[in-house]
Length: 362
Image (tube, rainbow, N blue to C red; front, top):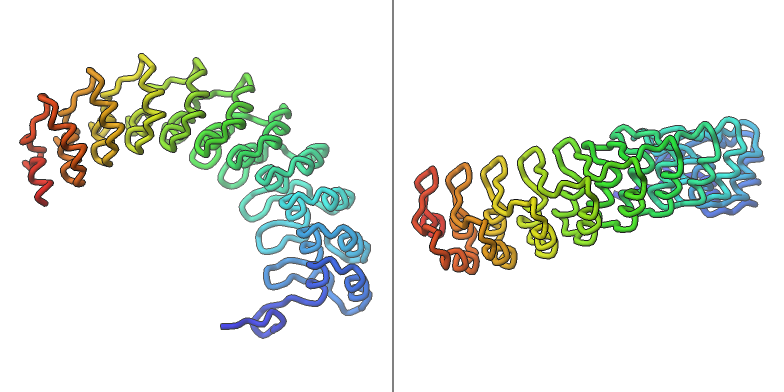
């Protein structure tokens, strides 16, 4: 159904003032706010005020004009996403931010419905100048968490904003190991998304723990290994505090994740470490070879089978072997590799009595 934004019967509103403020037409804005019956603080169909749209789009003169009108609320939130300052910070409108900072009524650290502050959004989008401007004010908390526990540093690291991360880490009040949603640290997010430079910047802070686990026991190395961030893995392995053999709460190691998702480069790099057991079983009894056979990662299977420590026929907690998983998922080449090994019993049943042939027939 087509909705007319000017149709008040449908609860929608996008007035002439909203439109002029959106496009930055200062002459029209000035004319409209001189009308006595005009509600300058009215929200549109999204709850945005005219000032919010002007701040959002960086129209400085319109912002000044609206703020010059008596009765204007420079701190009115809209649609749960925050105030005019939130939008100006979010989109890097540093001049508008400076204008709004001149109003006593503006709460510089006011959170939106998600608990996120203007600084949080500026950090997320890499608006370095805005980050610096906000941090000059004492009332701004540089380490304020949102409802999920994420701080401005968390978002800066998550989105790979090197400059914002550097600025925030320069503040004493900022905790580089702050745990956000799920207990993940900024380093975990940077490792997860492969932001190498951010990883290096965070590791440059002396008090950071490069092996800090989240609520599931995942370390930054676990995330880097699962998502194949080979360069990040290399950087993390350069730190003595990082224990590459350390399992998460499910008993899975970084090597297990690299094998499961077929990241050969990461796998090779991890296997260079003496402390890593290439045949370690997780809480389900599965080895890295089991996972790579299950998912048909031929290159990984080949690398693992070249290791003397690897038992190609070790069963998991259900009695299933790597060959069983390869047969079940129709990975013929992997099955051939496994069957070349004398230790592999091609007729070995699992705890339910099913053999690899049973799964292949099924």
